[in-house]
Image (cartoon, rainbow, N blue to C red; front, top):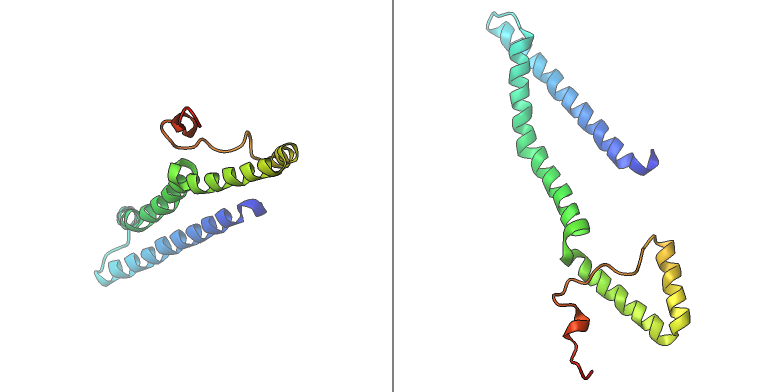
Length: 139
């Protein structure tokens, strides 16, 4: 529960705001119907409130959701450029650890990877061809 607290709080805010939006909309519809000497009916109000809600949803929530979820996805999960700098730095640090003491460095890297739930070292480097293939033959 605590792990998803932000999600639960967001859901609560959303539920409360949509309930208040529809509730106040109903009261405004009833007042408007009385001003025109008509009896309020639920079906026309549901259609009007649904339309208004969807317009608001399109203009605000979908844009925001796309920006937050889309950017989070592309920056964290899908974008090669979002990982290159961190992975490059991590690869350099790993190389330094192994350079100082190969056995102890490799063991330390494995221990750190295990404690941080990392499997098999770094993410794939985004080069075409790989760096090793670009090295001169006499190097």
